[in-house]
Length: 597
Ligand code: ADP
Ligand code: ZN
Image (cartoon, rainbow, N blue to C red; front, side, top):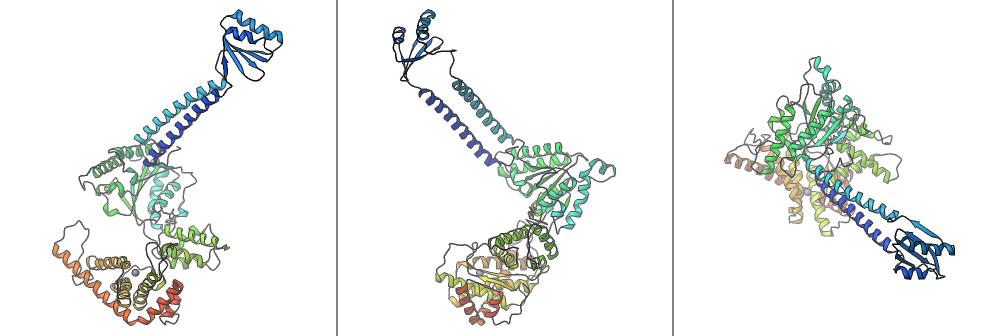
């Protein structure tokens, strides 16, 4: 399957490239052929009499006879030829050469070997090009076989359950499925209900794909994977045809695991709008449902689908006999993170004082993919520093890079912009230090990272499972602290605060419409498409505003009270770009309480 990983669009480009390549090769051959053969020394055509006259010339060197064509080569390399049809006449010339003991060569009347070989090559090449173009066209119309990724049970890129950590519950839930895949018939005899479809839901990067792959490996069956978005085809009906092909293939491979990544791309609720794209998606989804219903009980095909939006899926997908088991894969807690880190640290050399437990505690909210990335970045940093092992500082560097985005080099702010950014960030820090229920400020920086000009980084000391009202209010105040400092200390406002404001309003709106933390009481707005009275929406808007305004006032009060410290912090930032938590605490006159980072 040489083209197995090409997607439809790249297929077309590659088709074009290959055709262009073949055609230019063909042209090159033609050109070489014409030139090569026309480059031979020019041959002078004469009649028999003139040719015969030449034979007496002392300057002749050799004679060659090719059917009726006789050619004399002179000592100086020039050639003279004539058509001599009469055999007797030919013999006359030949005998003169023989008399002089000059070489005479006979060759059959045929083009040269090279020429005929080239002719064959050209013919074959043209056939090849025509055939190839035809095949690719056919393949791209019908999808061919190469559009699903297949991993054999013995393949090198398989994962085992040992490579997946911190998701024991999910592993337990998959145990029965693995049992079934190992021997579908036996499973049936023992009276088990054959699993068909499993929906894995959870945030991105939590190891859903890895789990499915490992399950196939544990059962020692092939793993056929495909992305839900690859069913969105340009031409109507092709998506459904792809689904049909996928399952035809799966039945041949059975027992096997079919994995559909991002099933939400094709499994959205049907009949949303009348446009043709969504009609085509409906058709694709219908085909998937038909295929899943068509499984015989013990056929041995298990379909695992993953999504991070189970709420938007068509309810028909989760009916009995389809994706009737849901496995939720959540972000790991500190202990789970430590286990995941252990998996990925296997191939690294860690400094003796670098404890995985310490990294795990400092990375709440990190997914498995984030943690893998963290260790990878740390290892890269260690290599760059020529260190023997990965140390704390490399991990801290990697964590900052992941949390705050990579520093943007070659992007210069002028002094005025740097100053405004420093004051803004110092405002965040001041509020962060003042509030009681927030997370400790970990770092502040005015080096541009990602899209932000500056960053204030707070880091939860632990996983917060429960968020209290006071914590949310403190977060809003912290977010508004930057704007408060602009207003009070710079007497202006910058557009840089827009992201802060957006996040603050989002929290406030959730407090009102989901958590019931406003004078409106415990209300729940639910999905945007659910009907709500305009008056309720207006009141929610009001209550949200009230929260924002109250916290803005609070942030301003804090900034007023902390003016001196903010100016000191600003100076520090102007000088050093980035300050860590010890330096921050120094500015605010806090004796280094040394909170465990
Ligand atoms: P998802 O399918 O949930 O988006 P993936 O399975 O693609 O996530 O995870 C991406 C990568 O992150 C994996 O290849 C693995 O390196 C790492 N990873 C994610 N979760 C885990 C985990 N629980 N244990 C070990 N590694 C993990
Ligand atoms: Zn800000």
